[in-house]
Length: 338
Ligand SMILES: [Mn+2]
Image (cartoon, rainbow, N blue to C red; front, side):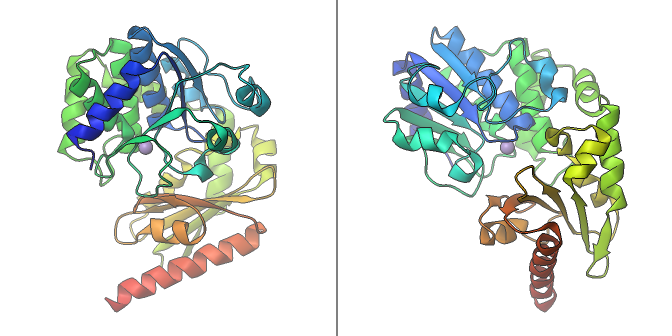
């Protein structure tokens, strides 16, 4: 839980900085996009020189939030440019929504070499302790809630656009206020953001009624692979590279697809295994609450939360499916034994 001293330390670091780089985890989601944008806007308003950087492209349904493009590492700027200062010289790096090197591919090489102060703002349990100052609150449903508290603590105002970004951060990390983390803090913050001018129905349309047809075809391909195991309590699904080619969908189109099968009453935990272009398997895990999927993810070198976690496996798809099924079986049998 972040203390007042943590908030003060974060404010002091920001105040004494003049040139700031803001980034977040690879495969940016609504929380990372929202927090990155809010921090960029607030720091610019404070007169800082600010550069933002994504480590992979953001899904297109978040584009309505961006009035200027966020460069992508490996596309708009390469690691060498970052290392040799061509992208900019910074006296503060802000990382939102992760504290794990494994979530910062390539960027970690730059991070590990730089002497620059690093401020981490995050709500994940898994932590590599990357920051020289850290605002960590694992009880927060979204990093957006910590950013919201930081703004309040510092007395920094928030424009309507920034309020929208924060709303997206909170709404997406709570599955539009449906997941178990949708607590009164999340609702209270949402209420304040609505009072600041956010229109939830408009945001809902942007986020959830704005799918491209290729993305929908990817959803259909995924659903065709759905298998129920362990008495219908575990749902497994996967996507191969050829599914992306055939549907025309992009990798970032996989966001949220895993949640579909949670609508099945018997399902308590689920996985979506995605074959990456380098042949590795990205494995996303979800739970309705009884199974702690972060235990499986951590064991496999990944991380996350009790209800949402993930890892990457360097094995063929069939083997990855077996590994996850075995881990799930172990978790369920432990639960049955309780
Ligand atoms: Mn988050």
